[in-house]
Amino acid sequence: MARAPSPATFAEQRTDEILTRAAAALGALAGAAARLEAELLLEQCSGWSRTSQRAWPERRLDATTATAFAALLGRRLDGEPIAYIRGTQAFWTLELGVTPDTLIPRPETELLVETALARGPAGTATVLDLGTGSGAIALALASERPRWRITATDRSGAALAVARANRDRLGLEVDLVTGDWLGAVATGSCDLILSNPPYIDGDDPHLDLGDLRFEPPGALTPGADGLAAIRTILAEAPRCLRPGGWLMVEHGCDQGVAARALFGAAGLVEVATLDDLAGLDRITLGRR
Image (cartoon, rainbow, N blue to C red; front, side, top):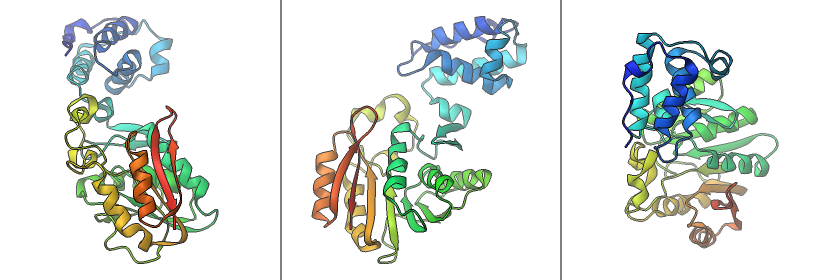
């Protein structure tokens, strides 16, 4: 773990010097985009956009802002995700509020949005997003398909509060409901059911690394069996789908074969697994 520079390191220093020192410290942190993160943290505490930081590299930090910047940098060097430090994360075309009560929306999950837009009805549709967290999937769909009636569920009241704040700030139409999977969903009521459920095995060592250490455990893993939540969804999804309706689920990069088998055993057809931009299995879908 890298040691955070003291506030005095940054007080009355030029912006370019501050960013160089901060990026050097962040460079020791695995997975950090050092210069980008330094600029984002400086923007957070100073209000100076990344563009203005580059345009006026000679601008200097006062002591108060230097103290705030050093504190933010220290949190990041302790491993806290930058999305939680800043309280926001970009997803699709949206800027979403996030807190430690929600997963951090990731670019890989945008494949779920793309696929729903491509396979879903062109006109009206009834859509269900299970385990919505920050509301990322549901809100991205609502921004593209205003005629779809979208309901997003989560069993966490704290997560739903984050999703509600995002929905209201963005002015999008999504119904937010406290719920755990599909037990209370009416038969034959959905054209699309989507989920990014917990899918990491409970004993996976990655849970103790990087950003995952800070994210809500219940949103990352269903327990010992990483496929448990997907099995639960599949036990009810065929009943809840209208004829021709789609189920689409995100899963781990090593779970494609197992997911396809589960989808087939549930009686869904046109089952396929789609790869993310890295060429890894990312979502499996099937049709009633």
